[in-house]
Length: 458
Image 1 (cartoon, helix red, strand yellow):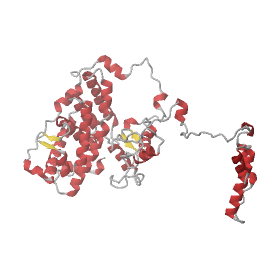
Image 2 (cartoon, rainbow, N blue to C red):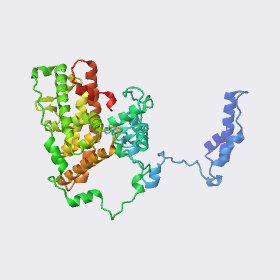
Image 3 (cartoon, rainbow, N blue to C red):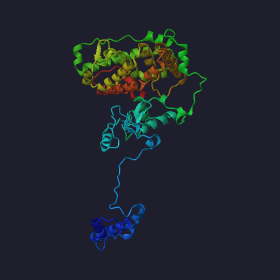
Image 4 (cartoon, rainbow, N blue to C red):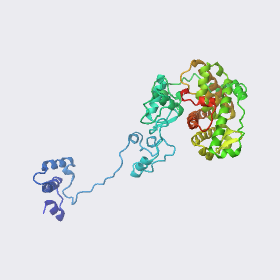
């Protein structure tokens, strides 16, 4: 019988060193039996080294009858945030959120196995440019770090790319580096805003600069002078040149087929293109642009302009249909019938934004002009008149909002401008749909419409 067993019977306590010696002898004996003569040999001295890691033997009184039990609690290691602020990371912290508005918190215990499984299964928003996992919303669009950095480098470096093919290269996660020109154009089509990139290359721009309290903030100066709608010359011109609503004059029986729907839509879009060109020429400052710049601006911005007009006309339907003419509405069912469901939903996104903002007719007229002036045209012959046109329209829009909503002008202007990325996505959906219709050859399309769809114009 071993010393440990005899002491257990008698109830006498043993010193810690004696216990370790007895346990080491038994452990070495067991290992030598299982390993055989050729097995690895464990030295008793190595096992006894553990004794020095234990508390001093003097801590254990010879009068004790049993080794005291120690209570252990298993708790997660404190995070850096909890060490600094005294509380663990909550399930709602940003570093536990995906880029999806539908993602739910991970549960009451973020460290539980169930919580980890939910995090693994949570939906991840994809980059709208290449399809990789999006890291957040950058420059107005859900995008990955690679596309965010690419867009920033391009804008800050004022880089111009040339496509070696026909300006319609496929951009995905594997091929996003194959053509920089098409990748940059897709960034713009998806709604990335050049205005969101700081051109000074300074990190943490908001913390690098301090506002001079002696210089009034521009919006404060505007509020102080309280502009009126009557004095807004840009708005007055846009009100007078706004095109009249179109009429489809189509036999309702022909709208039960996809051919009838697409054919009617094609005729309406062609007519609206003609009206849009006439409308653009009457915008103050547009005729100051070189002729080539005027044409380029229209070729690059017509789809966004039509998307804004369609969305505003559709507001009275409360999201039930898109209004393309006074007598021609398309529901979701009809859009699916003719393969235009993507275009339908993108336009409905703009309708939803306009409803949330509560856009007025005056704001709509100025926003539509700003969308045309802000179209992505790349290089122009003369940038000065285009810059002046954009500034004049922006100032008129600010004056209009201040006149209509003096108490909430700044906030409302911000919400209105946040609809620009959504409008730009309508451009991409519209070009895809009509490009597919053109390639199918089933629907006759007028020459002007075909020229606007040419891939080389963007």
